[in-house]
Image 1: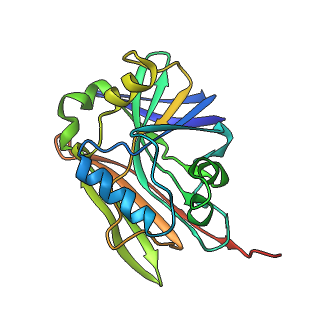
Image 2: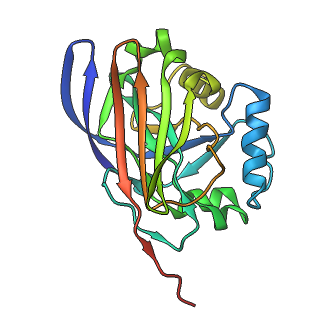
Length: 227
Protein backbone atom coordinates (compact mmCIF):
# COMPACT_ATOMS: atom_id res chain seq x y z
CA UNK A 1 0.00 0.00 0.00
CA UNK A 2 1.50 3.34 -1.03
CA UNK A 3 1.24 6.08 1.60
CA UNK A 4 2.64 9.61 1.80
CA UNK A 5 3.93 11.18 5.01
CA UNK A 6 5.30 14.49 6.21
CA UNK A 7 8.23 13.55 8.45
CA UNK A 8 9.60 15.66 11.29
CA UNK A 9 13.00 14.97 12.88
CA UNK A 10 14.72 17.57 15.10
CA UNK A 11 14.38 20.82 13.14
CA UNK A 12 14.17 19.07 9.76
CA UNK A 13 11.14 17.99 7.81
CA UNK A 14 10.51 16.29 4.50
CA UNK A 15 7.80 14.53 2.54
CA UNK A 16 8.19 10.91 1.57
CA UNK A 17 6.24 8.24 -0.29
CA UNK A 18 6.35 4.80 1.28
CA UNK A 19 5.29 1.37 0.04
CA UNK A 20 3.91 -0.47 3.09
CA UNK A 21 4.01 -4.20 2.41
CA UNK A 22 3.44 -5.55 5.92
CA UNK A 23 0.80 -4.47 8.46
CA UNK A 24 0.86 -5.81 12.01
CA UNK A 25 -1.61 -5.00 14.78
CA UNK A 26 -0.31 -5.61 18.29
CA UNK A 27 -3.27 -6.53 20.48
CA UNK A 28 -3.53 -6.70 24.26
CA UNK A 29 -0.44 -4.49 24.42
CA UNK A 30 -0.87 -2.94 27.86
CA UNK A 31 1.94 -2.97 30.43
CA UNK A 32 -0.33 -3.36 33.43
CA UNK A 33 -2.14 -6.66 33.93
CA UNK A 34 -5.17 -4.91 35.45
CA UNK A 35 -5.47 -2.57 32.46
CA UNK A 36 -5.25 -5.49 30.06
CA UNK A 37 -7.95 -7.30 32.02
CA UNK A 38 -10.15 -4.17 31.85
CA UNK A 39 -9.88 -4.10 28.05
CA UNK A 40 -10.52 -7.85 27.85
CA UNK A 41 -13.63 -7.44 30.02
CA UNK A 42 -15.03 -4.50 28.03
CA UNK A 43 -14.68 -6.57 24.86
CA UNK A 44 -16.13 -9.62 26.59
CA UNK A 45 -19.17 -7.46 27.39
CA UNK A 46 -19.88 -7.28 23.65
CA UNK A 47 -19.16 -10.97 23.08
CA UNK A 48 -15.46 -10.98 22.14
CA UNK A 49 -13.60 -14.09 23.38
CA UNK A 50 -10.55 -13.78 25.63
CA UNK A 51 -7.12 -13.86 23.93
CA UNK A 52 -4.94 -16.97 24.15
CA UNK A 53 -1.94 -14.89 25.26
CA UNK A 54 -0.81 -11.28 25.51
CA UNK A 55 0.40 -9.49 23.55
CA UNK A 56 -0.88 -10.99 20.29
CA UNK A 57 0.24 -9.93 16.82
CA UNK A 58 -2.42 -9.94 14.11
CA UNK A 59 -1.38 -9.89 10.45
CA UNK A 60 -3.66 -7.72 8.31
CA UNK A 61 -3.52 -6.86 4.62
CA UNK A 62 -1.57 -3.64 4.05
CA UNK A 63 -4.23 -2.67 1.50
CA UNK A 64 -6.60 -1.89 4.39
CA UNK A 65 -4.52 1.18 5.32
CA UNK A 66 -6.08 4.52 4.46
CA UNK A 67 -5.20 8.19 4.87
CA UNK A 68 -8.60 9.38 3.74
CA UNK A 69 -10.84 11.58 5.89
CA UNK A 70 -13.70 9.12 5.33
CA UNK A 71 -14.06 5.43 6.15
CA UNK A 72 -17.14 3.69 4.74
CA UNK A 73 -18.29 0.70 6.82
CA UNK A 74 -20.94 -1.98 6.44
CA UNK A 75 -23.54 -1.91 9.19
CA UNK A 76 -23.70 -0.02 12.48
CA UNK A 77 -21.42 -2.23 14.59
CA UNK A 78 -17.93 -0.85 14.08
CA UNK A 79 -15.84 1.60 16.09
CA UNK A 80 -12.40 3.21 16.16
CA UNK A 81 -9.47 2.87 18.56
CA UNK A 82 -6.65 5.42 18.69
CA UNK A 83 -3.15 3.89 18.64
CA UNK A 84 0.44 4.95 18.17
CA UNK A 85 1.85 3.37 15.03
CA UNK A 86 5.48 2.67 14.27
CA UNK A 87 6.65 2.76 10.65
CA UNK A 88 9.95 1.12 9.68
CA UNK A 89 11.76 2.97 6.91
CA UNK A 90 15.22 2.56 5.42
CA UNK A 91 16.57 5.26 7.74
CA UNK A 92 15.00 4.01 10.97
CA UNK A 93 11.76 3.94 12.96
CA UNK A 94 9.09 6.63 12.78
CA UNK A 95 6.01 7.25 14.90
CA UNK A 96 2.55 8.08 13.62
CA UNK A 97 -1.06 7.80 14.69
CA UNK A 98 -3.80 5.45 13.56
CA UNK A 99 -7.15 3.89 14.35
CA UNK A 100 -7.65 0.15 14.57
CA UNK A 101 -11.22 0.51 13.32
CA UNK A 102 -12.94 -2.82 13.95
CA UNK A 103 -16.24 -4.50 13.18
CA UNK A 104 -17.42 -5.43 16.69
CA UNK A 105 -20.11 -7.86 15.54
CA UNK A 106 -17.54 -9.82 13.56
CA UNK A 107 -15.08 -9.54 16.44
CA UNK A 108 -17.37 -11.70 18.55
CA UNK A 109 -16.85 -14.49 15.98
CA UNK A 110 -13.12 -13.98 15.43
CA UNK A 111 -10.74 -11.13 16.23
CA UNK A 112 -8.40 -11.80 13.30
CA UNK A 113 -11.38 -11.76 10.91
CA UNK A 114 -12.71 -8.49 12.34
CA UNK A 115 -9.31 -6.80 11.95
CA UNK A 116 -9.36 -7.56 8.24
CA UNK A 117 -12.93 -6.36 7.57
CA UNK A 118 -12.45 -2.63 8.24
CA UNK A 119 -10.06 -0.09 6.81
CA UNK A 120 -7.26 1.15 9.09
CA UNK A 121 -7.01 4.96 9.04
CA UNK A 122 -3.57 6.46 9.66
CA UNK A 123 -2.42 10.07 9.82
CA UNK A 124 -0.13 11.84 7.37
CA UNK A 125 2.61 12.97 9.76
CA UNK A 126 5.48 11.06 11.35
CA UNK A 127 7.95 11.85 14.11
CA UNK A 128 11.38 10.30 14.37
CA UNK A 129 11.18 7.67 17.12
CA UNK A 130 14.66 8.71 18.24
CA UNK A 131 13.28 12.17 19.08
CA UNK A 132 10.57 10.84 21.42
CA UNK A 133 11.89 7.54 22.75
CA UNK A 134 13.64 9.21 25.70
CA UNK A 135 10.40 10.77 26.97
CA UNK A 136 7.95 8.26 25.46
CA UNK A 137 5.99 7.70 28.66
CA UNK A 138 5.00 11.37 28.79
CA UNK A 139 3.10 11.21 25.50
CA UNK A 140 -0.71 11.21 25.74
CA UNK A 141 -3.26 9.42 23.55
CA UNK A 142 -6.73 10.92 23.10
CA UNK A 143 -9.72 10.32 20.89
CA UNK A 144 -13.11 11.97 20.48
CA UNK A 145 -16.20 10.47 18.88
CA UNK A 146 -19.38 11.99 17.52
CA UNK A 147 -22.12 9.86 19.12
CA UNK A 148 -25.79 10.79 18.73
CA UNK A 149 -24.68 14.18 17.41
CA UNK A 150 -22.50 14.97 20.45
CA UNK A 151 -18.70 15.16 20.48
CA UNK A 152 -17.49 13.18 23.49
CA UNK A 153 -14.07 12.31 24.87
CA UNK A 154 -13.81 8.63 23.96
CA UNK A 155 -10.28 7.70 25.08
CA UNK A 156 -7.57 9.46 27.09
CA UNK A 157 -4.44 7.90 28.55
CA UNK A 158 -0.69 8.37 28.80
CA UNK A 159 1.12 5.90 26.54
CA UNK A 160 2.84 4.62 29.68
CA UNK A 161 -0.16 2.29 30.05
CA UNK A 162 1.02 0.49 26.88
CA UNK A 163 4.16 -1.41 26.05
CA UNK A 164 6.68 0.75 24.21
CA UNK A 165 7.09 0.30 20.46
CA UNK A 166 10.61 -1.02 21.07
CA UNK A 167 9.31 -3.66 23.50
CA UNK A 168 6.58 -4.76 21.08
CA UNK A 169 9.10 -4.99 18.25
CA UNK A 170 11.49 -7.09 20.34
CA UNK A 171 8.74 -9.50 21.32
CA UNK A 172 7.68 -9.83 17.68
CA UNK A 173 11.03 -10.02 15.88
CA UNK A 174 13.58 -10.79 18.58
CA UNK A 175 15.50 -7.70 17.43
CA UNK A 176 15.33 -3.92 17.99
CA UNK A 177 13.78 -3.10 14.64
CA UNK A 178 11.32 -4.10 11.93
CA UNK A 179 11.95 -4.74 8.24
CA UNK A 180 11.62 -1.58 6.13
CA UNK A 181 8.11 -1.21 4.74
CA UNK A 182 6.44 -2.53 7.91
CA UNK A 183 3.78 -0.63 9.87
CA UNK A 184 2.77 -1.78 13.35
CA UNK A 185 -0.18 -0.61 15.47
CA UNK A 186 1.00 -0.46 19.09
CA UNK A 187 -2.09 -0.89 21.26
CA UNK A 188 -4.92 1.21 22.63
CA UNK A 189 -6.32 2.33 25.99
CA UNK A 190 -9.84 1.43 27.08
CA UNK A 191 -12.84 3.44 25.96
CA UNK A 192 -14.43 5.90 28.37
CA UNK A 193 -17.99 4.70 28.89
CA UNK A 194 -17.51 1.52 26.86
CA UNK A 195 -17.04 0.61 23.22
CA UNK A 196 -19.72 2.05 20.94
CA UNK A 197 -20.14 3.23 17.34
CA UNK A 198 -19.82 6.82 16.14
CA UNK A 199 -20.35 8.86 13.01
CA UNK A 200 -16.95 10.57 13.28
CA UNK A 201 -13.68 9.69 15.00
CA UNK A 202 -10.92 12.16 15.92
CA UNK A 203 -7.56 11.24 17.44
CA UNK A 204 -4.42 12.80 18.85
CA UNK A 205 -0.98 11.75 20.06
CA UNK A 206 0.23 14.66 22.20
CA UNK A 207 3.89 15.33 23.06
CA UNK A 208 3.88 17.82 25.98
CA UNK A 209 7.69 17.90 26.11
CA UNK A 210 8.18 19.13 22.53
CA UNK A 211 4.76 20.84 22.51
CA UNK A 212 3.31 19.22 19.39
CA UNK A 213 0.66 16.73 18.34
CA UNK A 214 -0.05 14.15 15.69
CA UNK A 215 -3.72 14.24 14.69
CA UNK A 216 -6.09 12.59 12.26
CA UNK A 217 -9.87 12.37 11.90
CA UNK A 218 -12.37 10.68 9.66
CA UNK A 219 -16.12 10.51 9.06
CA UNK A 220 -17.81 7.09 9.15
CA UNK A 221 -20.61 6.67 6.60
CA UNK A 222 -22.56 3.44 7.20
CA UNK A 223 -23.82 1.23 4.38
CA UNK A 224 -27.01 -0.77 5.06
CA UNK A 225 -26.78 -4.51 5.60
CA UNK A 226 -28.99 -6.16 2.99
CA UNK A 227 -29.88 -9.85 3.29
